[in-house]
Structure formats: structure tokens, C-alpha cells
Length: 279
Image (cartoon, rainbow, N blue to C red):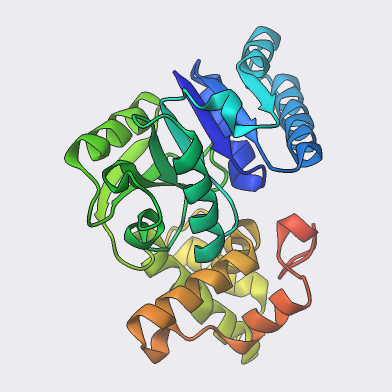
């Protein structure tokens, strides 16, 4: 199956790798061809590391790369079966890119957004194929994390939902069905927990190491909330908190000032080599 991935950031690269490893022809696109080429090079490096760790064979690495095609125009992928938008978590930006895809791609193409918290109904509102717009929220790192939230907007058809669900299963992922709501399932619970961990740290009640250790050993979490925030990206955490607060209007969804300060200072976690921890 031909798949278009629009976006070459962390999630775009990860989702590309997932589809390519499962035998799909992936068209990787960013309006800046230099960014697309850089993303492809990063995927190459990631796969080389997997070979060295004996996670995949050299033949598998080559097959994955053969399945990824860098393109400089959406027209090159207009006949794809599904397009997945994986740009920054900004509603206006996502609407702009989804509208662009809608105007170029064939009418039978399903368009999925990898949004982690935003309204699928609003994203779909700018298109002429509202019934074919759906959320497919992959989790970071996409090649490793098993869950995909399948998010239906008001106009998403049953056929589109079934297609996305079966596709996620075919990719070896665990799909969960969600009716549209801010933050969906995971982030509505997870991000406020991270925000509370930031509050505890800011108040000096415990060190970041002990906060993370407490949740790992006391709640059996595989990773502590502050280390997880660094992995997700503090900018993403802030964006989701702001969406939750805007939509629900409740104080419990107010982002902690320290989170906002760290984002303003570009201490975003692993992606900038420094967040709550240094990398």
C-alpha cells in the first residue's frame, strides 16, 4: 500500500519507519526538501544502530530503506491510499496542511492526523472529505510504542474508522477507539500527571530522581514522569495542557509556570539535549 507521511519531525520519521518496515511504500514529504533529506539520513542512522544491536538484519535495513521514497511534491503521492499528517501540534497549521492534502490527493484517499490532543472535527472542517478524516495518534517512539489511538470526529465514517483500526493492527499496533474529546484517552490522564510531578519538583518536595523513582517503584511505571516529559518533549506537554485548559476551563488543567518557563528557554527534553535531565 502507498502511504504519504507529511512531516519529518520526530513522529514523522518514526511513523515512516513503522510503515516501511511492514512492507508499505512510504512517500516522505516536507515542503523543505532539505528537511526531508535530513530526516531520511536520520532514519538511515537509526536503522544502522538497530543492525549493530542485532535488532534487525542488514537485509531488513535495506528493505526498509527501499520502501521509503523522498518526494518534493505531494503530487508524487496523489494516488496513495492513506496520508498521515505529522506536523507540529498547532490547530491552524494542521488545518492548513490537511487542506493542502485534500486539494491534491485523490478523492478516495483517507487523511489521518497524528494529533495528540486536537479536534478531528475542526481539522476536518476545512476539507471536502470530512468522512475520510480521522485521528491516528501514534506514540513516541513510534517504532517501539504499541498503542495507536483511533480518533473519530463527528463526521468520520464507520468505514474510515474500520480501515484505520485494521491498518493499525496490521502494523502490529494495539488500536483503541476514541470518540473525539480533548486529549483523547492517554494524554488526558498522562499530561496532568506530568504537570503535577513538575509542581512537586518546583516546590522542592523531592528531587527529580526521587519523583521518578517513586512512580517507577511505587506505581510500577516503566519510566518516571519527568523523564517521560523529556522524552515526549516539554513543548508538546505544554501544548496539550493548554488544549485541555482551553477546552475544559478547569484549573486542574493549568500548565505549571515552570513547564512554561522551560519551554520558553528551549529546554524541551531529549530533542534539545536538556530538559529536566541532560542528554
